[in-house]
Image (cartoon, rainbow, N blue to C red; front, top):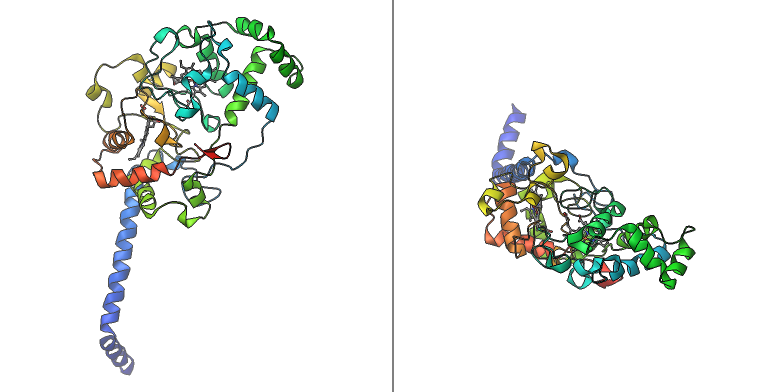
Length: 350
Ligand code: HEC
Ligand code: HEC
């Protein structure tokens, strides 16, 4: 009895503190469960989240240094800018993947030889070495395989054959010497591809402010960018845009909530996405989730270039991928976060 009494008097004495404590505990629990359910509310790809090696975050930093054969990188760089890879010596890979434009053309849809319209937006080549597959519809498994398309397609670089290209390069003594120094069999289709792909693997962009933040530099990004990152996670963007590239590692349907293509109109073959590769109904309008690295530099956005600004792209994602209308204030904060994903190339900010 004495014990009960003493507890009652204890409770009466400290009632205010007790109630305050209880209130704090309950609100912490509520906040936790809200974030938990918001994060779980879009779960089909949840299992694919690759939990970090460096941090506990769903996004990982790009390695600061990647070892590559520097001679192959140099040769690949020259070939990437080489107009002889096109039928009339007028276009190179860099014509559509311009390093002064974030590795893109900054056109809604890409322009090939003689003004031919390619009907899709040219994605950046920066960090393309980390993509799980290449192209919007993922039809190329590797960077080496990807190279056939621009070279052999008439509407891109004029449709030379590989034997034409090997012949042209063999007429250039500088190339003959450079290839010989690296590859025992000299100028060949495979060696051209190997050099270009090795160069592309050197196009990684480390040290973005966000990566510095992930590595523990608290002040590398602003308070608003941190809020934007939290929104990016709580809205569920991170279920699709995650991993080292903040994308690039899975396929997803565009138009999960609502029919983007019906709303936009004028549906063309390229809009079918991965269906064009697999002929599987489930792959209709399915695309590789694009990387959001250096996204501030690569407007316009989406495979059809339909979003002129990042602001529009974020709103379209909210509407069609998450079924929410994201308030302007949140869009602005998410944008502040996305801007921190711009990295460095060869030691200089892109
Ligand atoms: C005429 C413009 C043009 C030229 C020239 C061009 N590309 Fe592209 N590139 C594109 C377009 C457009 C795409 C997207 C096509 C698609 O997904 O169907 C693309 C996609 C890519 C991708 C895949 C990136 C990703 O995220 O999926 C890589 C890598 C690439 N190109 C490298 C090259 C290389 C190497 C060359 C030179 C051999 C080259 N490109 C020449 C326009 C061009
Ligand atoms: C269900 C998966 C999914 C979710 C969730 C999602 N995205 Fe996307 N995102 C995609 C796909 C797929 C594309 C490519 C669509 C296309 O071009 O047809 C894309 C494209 C983008 C692009 C354009 C990239 C470029 O290079 O053109 C941006 C920016 C983007 N998303 C940001 C976001 C943001 C911000 C959120 C959260 C508000 C979000 N995404 C949520 C799958 C998703």
